[in-house]
Amino acid sequence: MVFIGCVAQPRYTSQPVEKRSYQPPEEKSENKIDQIRMSEIIESLLGTPYKEGGLSKLGLDCSGFVREVYKKYAGFNLPHSTEKLFKLVKKVDKENLDYGDLVFFSDSGFSPSHVGIYIGEDKFVHSTKGYGVIVSSLDEEYYRKSYIGARRVIP
Image (cartoon, rainbow, N blue to C red; front, side):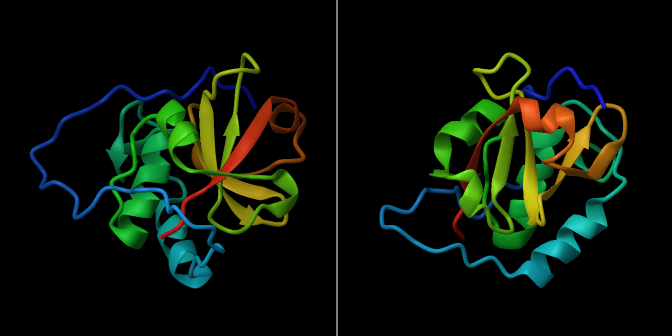
C-alpha cells in the first residue's frame, strides 16, 4: 500500500462552530474511551472515500477522519492537520497503545504525514488515498517502517 501523505489544507464551511476545542489535560489521566460508542462511529465511516481536505461521508483525508471521529464522539474541534495533531495531544509509548490513540507515520522519518486511530491488536483505522477509510495493521512493512509515534486524546 503506497500513499504520498495526508496533510490537509484548511477548508471553511458554513456549518456551525464546534461546541468546544480540545485542550490537552494538565494532569496525568488514563484513557477512558467508550470503545463500543467509538467503534460505532468508526464503523459508520469505514469505506468513506478519500478526499483531500474532506470532512464528511462524501470524503475524508486522514486528519479529517480523526477530526470527524472525535467530533462525533466527544464534540472536540481537533485540528485538521496531521502535524498539529502530533504536537497537540499527549505522547504515548507504542507499548502502551490503547483504543482510540492516534498513530502517526512519516514518509520522511521526521515530520508526520499520516495519522490513524488505534483500535487494538496492532490494528488502526485511517483514510488512504487509494482505498479511503480502511483498517490496517501496524505490522505491515510500510507502517512498521514509517511509524513515528502515538498520541492520546483524552475526552
